[in-house]
Structure formats: structure tokens, C-alpha cells
Length: 277
Image (tube, rainbow, N blue to C red; front, side, top):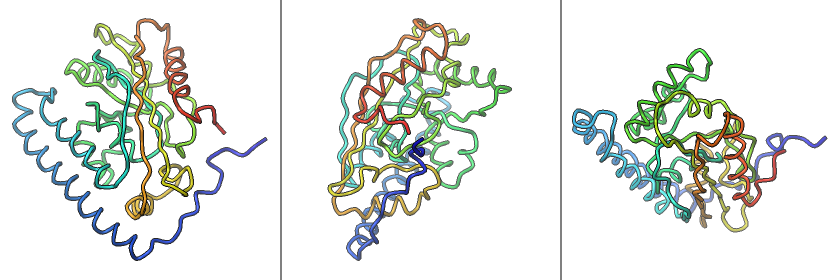
């Protein structure tokens, strides 16, 4: 029996050169200025937006999209997308490979991430997540009713929720089996017409002569060193986001069937989607 993919050694990483540290400095400074400057503008605008529109956010998502597009330009990572954006209410589900997924999936489509509750308390990341409207949930059956109520409120406000059904990030070379838990909420009594789930495939191409897992961030890999290596890269790779045909929730009998259809669509679009272990 072969070992699991995540038991394999992490990619070999060369020490950062003096020029690499220079790239870390100027890219990091510009990226930090754009991200936290955009956050300051977003929070200021939200003070006006909240009393006027409540849960609806007609203005601030434009800032999030601009920041995410700018991030790839600053990093030097190519970004492209194809496929039609879903106009119907519902959710987007995607494979999960890296912290860069947050930028990639926000760059073109207005989405609100669904995340485990403990992320809200993470330094820096939790603050950013709360500011951009992330939905925090407790992964416990006892909270299922409250979770459904929260989803209903956000969907009625016109939000399209995004979650990662794999339940963890990968090395970017495969699609793991989709967990079915969160799909159940969309088959419950939400009282929202024409609900759809749009599968989305995120594909990373490593920089020339680098390990194909260069952008993957998984397991016990620390965020800081991975960020530094990404900032230091002399030549960068690219990321592509493929929006696949939406799945009409009413066409599926249960969460397992809906999850299986979404997984099959993402797996078919991924160049190495058949790799599991």
C-alpha cells in the first residue's frame, strides 16, 4: 500500500539569496500597504454601508476584488479565469491548495468565505476575515439549526457563499474527496428559490524549474516561510480559476449526491484531479 500523498517530504526549498530578500522587502511592503490600506478604506466605508444596507454589501466587495487582483500583480503571479459567473443565489465550492486561494477566488467573483469559527481568533487573518464578511460556523451537529439560519440570512442578502469541501488544503496536484456536511444546509428548509451550487477549479502552475507543489500550502507547513518563499521568487508561475456549470440544488435527492456531482466536476477540470493518495 502506497503512503498518503501528505506523508511525502515537502518540496526542497533553496535558501533565499540577497536579491531574493530584496524582493521580499519591496514586494512585502507594497503588498502590505495595499492589503491593509484597502482594509482601512473598507472598514471606513462599511461604517456608512452597514446602517444603510444592513447585511447587504453593495460597495465594499469592489475594494476586496481590487485588492486581490492587485496582489497577483505585485507578486508577479499570472492570474486568469474562464467560465461564466453564476447569477443565481447559492454557493461556490472549490478545491483548496493554498492561502493564495483567498486572493484567486475573490479576484473576479464576489464571494463570502465559510470558515471554521476558530479562524476568527487568529491574529491578523481573523481580523481580515471578519472585515471581508466571512461566515464563521461551528462544525458541530448541535449548531446545525443556527448554521442554517445564518446561511439563510446571508443568501437573502444576496451573498454567494464559498466553502472548501475537501476540508483541508492540498499540495495543488490533486483533488481530495469532498466532505458532504456543508452541502446539507443547502438541501434544508432555506426557503430560497432556485438555489444553485457552482463548482470551481483552482489550478496552480509553479514557476519554471520549481517543484510542481511550489504554491501548495498544507499539513503542518508554517505560513511565514511559505509567504517569504513566494515573495522571494525571481520568476513566478500562474494561477487559473475555472468556473464550471452551476448545479441546481433541487435536482439532487441528498447532500451526498450533490457533493459527488460537485467533486466530479472539479476533478474533471483539474489536470491532475485523479490523484488522491
